[in-house]
Amino acid sequence: MANRRQVKVIVLILFAGAMIGTYIGELLGFVLPEGVVRQFFLQSVEFSLGGLFGGGDDALSLNLGVLTLILGLKIKLNFAGIFGLGMAYYFLRYFR
Image (cartoon, rainbow, N blue to C red):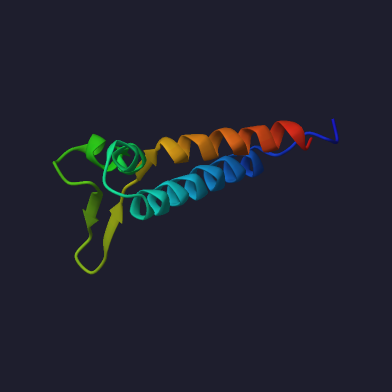
């Protein structure tokens, strides 16, 4: 049982893989010429948890008069981000 990874390390590595993959996809999209391939790399899906708590805004805000807290989470993934997530998963499985 000493070889088991902590959950926070797994989440951190998967998050880093998705983030690096998304940035690579954005860079590839800007380097490639106009066309279907560029559109494929630039098209992304956004998930927002801030709008679930009410209101049309992307974030939940709590105004306390002197202090305003703004809470929200937005995830943006494209094809390269999903590929990066898969590579991070493979990295976790390969290097146990």
